[in-house]
Image: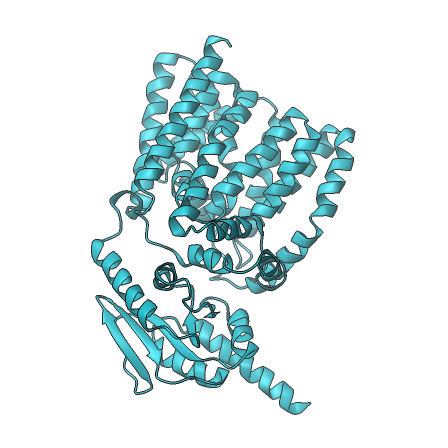
Length: 470
């Protein structure tokens, strides 16, 4: 091993150690999120039920949910799920380093690895119990195998990438374009195998697109580009300009430019299309381009070591500063009052729960109650999806509704209990029908979270009229 490669290995190990230490120290800093709760609640079911829910009902990529299933059935909870994300993030660092070495050599690969490891999108999702660190790991492994022309490994990694996140399809599209441009005939059979083997995933993605076809509305391409590049590097405008200048310079120096273009082009197209559609990508969805952005910036660094090293160190520091500004809770921790309110509400719910309780949304309070009492009810009416909410309500007569809200709620049909800023509201009797449940939900959520409830009511009324007319 020559000196430069040894330096890269040592630097990669240092990045892994730093990220692991940070992750273990801050594992519980960020407040629990409903998407993490969703994965754990689905993980209580059988593997078959999870695949059915993800592939045919909710839509999306199943690998994260299968890992959540393993976490739950091994006796773990939120901490264990976040440790899975942390493990994927740490494991992705040497893969990023190996890919970067192929593209810019060992010295600049070390800078690229440091840039990637210090970015907000990397650090936050290393500690967030969702699928994005897994997506980064599988996508980077897929691009590394593609660069090495290890077609069997590329097929395996690509399928894992597709199963990790729907935006893996975007990365695969770029890879297929690369294979066509370099006329890699030996890869054709493997590419066909990946595309054909992913048919269930294509169906699941279509289901997901049907559920989330409407969003808050399109934004300008410039705004999306600034948000995405800022989260991948540093969002301070002067620093953002510097990162972009270095990346432009680096584009002329990097090796295997068609491979870099294969990764970046689909992401740029997605950002451009975001100006015309309401369902638009966020920076986390484009985490698969992080290694390539880091490589371009590293390639643009000056050749003189005495200039490049302090400049790279300063850029890493500004990346970390942006991460602190972007998500301060990740570094300072959640307020203790919020933690104690959630814990008290969960303990009370665990003591007073009944089997016919119907939970509104995948609230972290419900997760804490379940971790306290494994027999805690599991029937949930989704908070953010009217179609799934209505399907759950129509599956069988709903029992007592349970809601967690900020502030006070008053209604004669409700029993309420206040814990700090949180109020637990529970219907005094079984609601018995979707109409009655939706009536109570509208009372509880007035001015807070009504859109899904109202859309579910509209769907229910249309369905009722349609049934009556037949």
